[in-house]
Length: 345
Image (cartoon, rainbow, N blue to C red):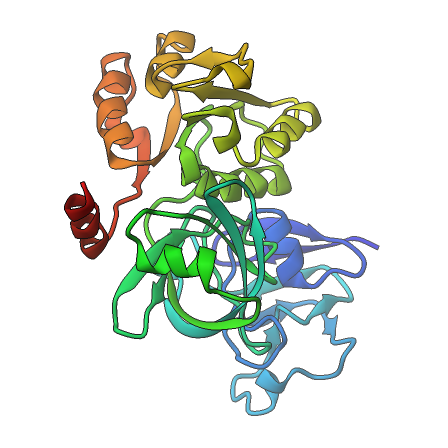
């Protein structure tokens, strides 16, 4: 049986299917509601029930034990028994989300290519990290240094945090990931951070441009967009040096077959004879602007090396893109890594 939930402060409505919690349904519909642990203990997702009734299949959540306000419900555990009207704060931007410092484990390491490692992070059982699609976390190293990496999965699929880590010459942390880190290694992170995330309230078609592991945050955005049913046209341009550097090319091609509103264009800047490349080649932004001579009505997301974004932005503006509708995430090396690279050069 399907019930509907209305948020009294905003008028937003969404449907909850049988077996779903209020929070699960909200996330499925792209309605941002606050949460923390997702097991009923922390109280971050407490709302006020103004009309209707709910039940808790696993018993009353711990967060309600000391509840002082009448009519409270824990949306991560509550299943509707009727249509509901609730009062709750909505999450609409990065400032609405609590930043946390958390321990985690590298639950799984998987080599995606010759120089990219997929690292799945597992948080403590009592914790979940609420984030917006496209944000990042920082690893806090033992000596206090920090390394930032984008979250490559969508917010609704938050059992693990997925990172795409490229091996950087001279990088002590990425060197450790590739050469010394083992499954279940203990780490510490802080996040979510950043203002690079999918703008869900826009009606404009979307262009995405990824350079190398700049694909990671765009992957999270795309999986979120597919999950909540965004039907705007989306075109991903993913650039790399050679074919082997498109480390999840098959996934992007599968999306193109599955979702009618999604297009994918891989671009190689230096294809070799072994690549047998018949696709687009050259500078990534030039391929994009060649396909879209008028960019006035688009949201454009850029993710990758600073040089790529610096070259692309004026070219996009020259073809009508509005600066307010260009969102970018430049992958900067940490200063100590830059120093090592300069010394070795």
